[in-house]
Length: 311
Image 1 (cartoon, rainbow, N blue to C red):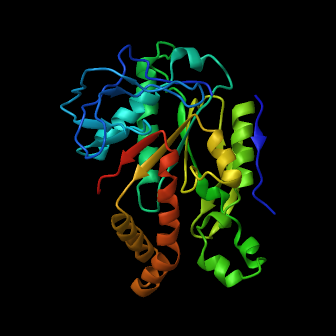
Image 2: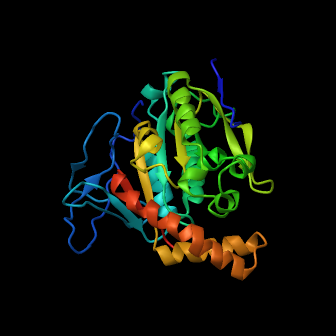
């Protein structure tokens, strides 16, 4: 097994194994063209969306998918996030064919503003895939716990170190704006994704929020992982290295949320980590909101938009 290790110091196509594609109920949205759609495509394989009349009534779920007339970007929404997690997990279940290729990976990029629920969505979908996959495959012994087939790669591990921010021309500004695109190392993330694509295995960094720095080689993605959800703010930016990162993804998802709602969630998060309300509000206005406004502009580059529902 070939494993690549990435230091942070200075496509194959998958679909649900079900014979029936996931179909969603249509909903109403002004200035949009409504149609039934089945979500079973891949950017890497250049397969377009197709229409199909029908509906899905799984446990009386009500999941809507709307398509823009200018560009077919499905917008998925439901009564609760659990319904969306279930549908997305089934959609990403690996087929037995793809599982037979050792290095095969289906890499999904999940972007969205701070407070949108990216980490939660990625974790919930991965948990469901790992639970469902053994049930869909006849190759596993029911008495043996199968290895996980899906995993999450957070973009947090690709933050610049505090020492790197200290070495910048304006260290105070660099620390105050930590979380902006230029406080990450996108070249390292791109290298990670290329190694993952080419070699099938990689060690990647995580992020220690207590220390405030990346932790090298803390996340292992192995050959058994067929679905990798990369989650982070700037994965859909269409400039510089970020554009190259986006091109490495099989699918590009964007989780959408009302900006004020997301900032309220971020405010609570800041306060829960010990910041005073005044400091938390200042950080939101000075850093988090401008970052979120930039991220929202990248929604146009998504293949799938997911409506976040308040938790």
